[in-house]
Every structure is written in structure tokens, then in C-alpha cells.
Image (cartoon, rainbow, N blue to C red; front, top):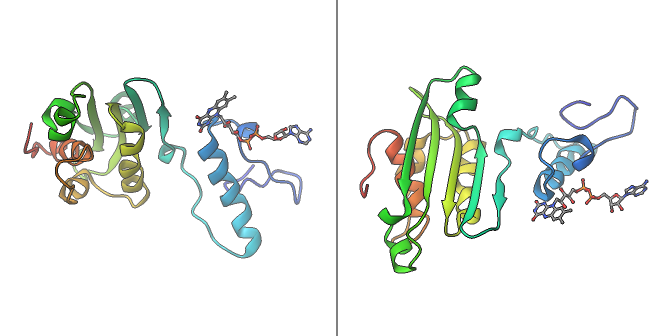
Length: 171
Ligand SMILES: Cc1cc2nc3c(=O)[nH]c(=O)nc-3n(C[C@H](O)[C@H](O)[C@H](O)COP(=O)(O)OP(=O)(O)OC[C@H]3O[C@@H](n4cnc5c(N)ncnc54)[C@H](O)[C@@H]3O)c2cc1C
């Protein structure tokens, strides 16, 4: 099967759980989009499995995408990593949910975002910002310089991104 999910059989495509990878609804959906769009003459970007968010709706919530430090190093990256706790974030204190953290894994030197890993309040929502940064090949510095409203839980993504370069403000 190729990156547009064409099988060896002309006119037969395969996407979703049946092809493996992450067995998740949003992965299956995007694979379907990448398979179907070329049929209508469009040229979609192939789906990189490292862009697929993995979220668990437990308490506290858990969310991640991309590579952790060990995986990144296995692929030959030199890595900078940050870890910022929710207790450094005003909205988490206001909400009475100070437990948890956000980690950002970036390529040393370029700052390219390679992954994000978080436990805590609403991280299943917050992970989307990291996934977008990965899509546009953004750097941790760029995510950190994006303005995050105060007080919001999203500030932890900005702080953890700044912390990759040792520039966190609240931690
Ligand atoms: C209990 C449970 C909870 C989940 N929760 C989440 C979640 O919170 N978030 C998330 O992202 N993912 C979740 N998933 C995974 C998600 O449901 C799957 O990844 C997603 O449905 C895969 O989509 P799909 O189209 O590949 O397969 P499916 O949704 O399984 O669709 C396959 C379809 O093909 C049909 N079919 C099978 N064989 C044939 C045949 N021979 N002829 C014709 N039709 C056939 C089936 O009836 C089915 O309708 C969950 C899965 C389970 C089981």
C-alpha cells in the first residue's frame, strides 16, 4: 500500500483499523480523506503517524503525539525536552486541578517540535496546538511566542514550549 492508501489491486484502497498503525477514529478519518481527495483531483499531504494525537479520557486526562525522548534519540535526533507542571499555571490553580504536567520534545538546534506529552486537566483538548505545530513544522520557540490568553490552561503549552529553550516565565 502506498501513502495514498492504494493497495496492489487497482481501484482498491484500504484505510482505518484494517491497515494498522494507530487504531483510532480520527486516524481512520484522516486516512480516508487522504485516500479519497486524489480521486477528486486534490493533492493532500500524506498522513504522518507522528501527527496523530493519542488521548485517554481518564482522570487525570492523558494526551500525547509524536516522539518521546527515547524514540527521538533512536531516530538519530539530538533532543531538548521540557517539563512544566500545571501548578505553575494560574487557571489550573483556579480550577483546583494543579496536578499533572506538559512535556515538549524538540530537536536540539532547530527547535522543531517532535512530540508533546501531557497529563492533567483538559490535555485531550490542549494537545491540538502541538499537533498543529507539528503539521506546519513549527518550533518550540514559535509555539512559545504564540500568545496564550490568561488565565487559561492552554498557557501550559506556551510555557512548556518556552521551557525547551530555558525561557519559561512562570516556572
Ligand atoms: C469500545 C471502543 C471504544 C473506542 N473509543 C475510541 C475513542 O474514544 N476515540 C477513538 O479515536 N477511537 C476509539 N475507538 C476506535 C475506533 O472506533 C476505530 O479506530 C474506528 O472506528 C476505526 O474506523 P474504521 O472505519 O477503520 O473501522 P470501523 O469503524 O470498525 O468500520 C468498519 C466497518 O466495516 C464493516 N464491515 C466489516 N466487515 C465487513 C464486510 N465483510 N462487508 C461489509 N462491511 C464490513 C463493519 O460493520 C464496520 O461498519 C474505539 C473502539 C472501541 C471498540
